[in-house]
Image: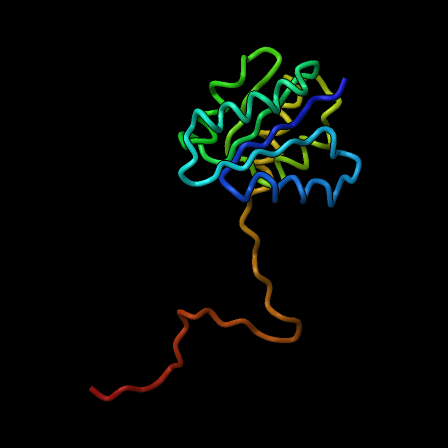
Length: 149
């Protein structure tokens, strides 16, 4: 059984992430749902819209992904998930979503773990290499001038 992946995030992030997922996995359209939370939208209105989307897929387990803990999308999602057939992970990023889509056929507990690992492993500092055949000088290096004092 496939898990529904439900993204609730500040507009336009939810739909943008869904589009990225569809770009990589063109077959995931039925499994990835997005709800953008618009500025000044009352939380009750957002919750009602989220419940409608969730009810349309009530026969499936759901992994709900939100962008920022403590913000409206996450607060709405906390009221939406039950902890059994639906789980919530916050801090969504593209690596987390792609990992979730890749493993959406796994049991919900395993999928939650894969989502968190995918999200955290997708964040890293990348070293900048010097262009080929050029020496790279730190901006802290200074020319060695003789100064008279």
